[in-house]
Image 1 (cartoon, rainbow, N blue to C red):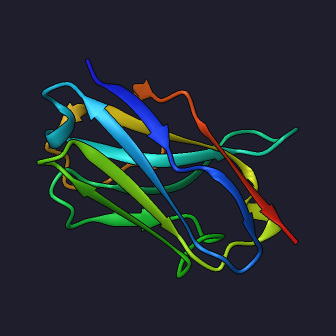
Image 2 (cartoon, rainbow, N blue to C red):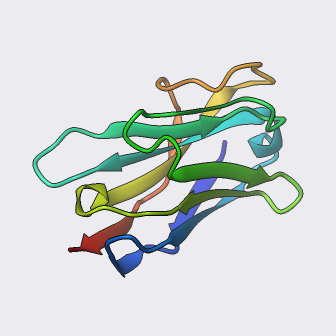
Length: 125
């Protein structure tokens, strides 16, 4: 079992940066793939980025590639999402997620088992 709590959301101007954090509890976090997702009002939740357990495999949605960076600190049990050059269309509730399968080489875009409660990111134009 993994419990996840996001933080770091807020209001930011377009073009600015913001860093989200996701604190995890549970022994399996360090061996699990983890990811970030977001959901804008009236839209379905979408994949943002993911990272495998050893941090040597990452993947991103095309819409954020080159602007967002996902990283993790297994010793601290924390997942991060550094967001740069933010756009109004990045406005959404951002969720972190963890998988139940351990030691995967890749970082999936779907099929996650544990979810945080979300943190709001609002980008003003």
